[in-house]
Length: 338
Image 1 (cartoon, rainbow, N blue to C red):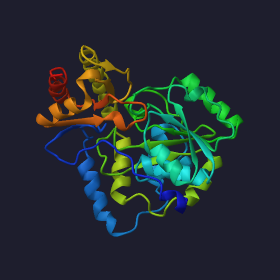
Image 2: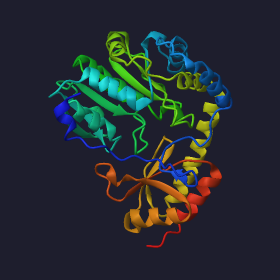
Image 3: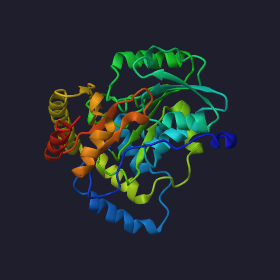
């Protein structure tokens, strides 16, 4: 990290509401959690009087099976963002350039800037057509946040091959890929995959995730990783959650059904972006973002003001939650006065 660059880098806005009385559509988090989480946490808390085993062998084994890579290719991290930072600060130098999509997760550009490197901003739907040569890294968000767009596997693999040819590491943020049945890129040469467990499993405060890194890069990132960087409860609960295949399938089915239902209803009034993620991006047009947010607050709900994303000036992002919660959201959004 470049000490000089830090002075010019600001924090970026995110969704998420800490008021438990508010139904939060601003954060794309599963409103349900797998059974057995409390027991797994309590058992691990009792073991927290000692340092965790810094090898995290059990966690790596489950994570490798979860995404389809070897356990030795798994780098435990306290959340997906910590993995993204580890990859960027390890592989990107000062004055390098990095291909970064927009509109997309704001932390990519921030982490690149903190390294004293240069963001080469590319529209997310044109990124796979860009030339990765002469860049220190290319970053892809799949599905893209906030649009919910999933890149087709053939196009993504073709881009990865061009990254390999140009010796440009590809960082793929798969924070929301678990909500789909699309395959991970984990285990492929030249790609670093960042995974977050806490969105799919409804535990964002737990801070559990990992990187899947091919052997050629894994040793370097493992050396740079902080010791004991994943707490004992987070490792235990994360491993427990990754084993819950039936929970994942039920979640995918519910999200798909509810997302399609919500999109169809919302299209009666707004422009709705096609999505394969647990959220929808809406262009609210003349209704106005402030008016919609105000109407939601009056009914004890909140959504993500997407105007902080580059190129979006009249947009909201809404999470897909439980049917009865989604019904409340639809009632407000379809009845806002202009």
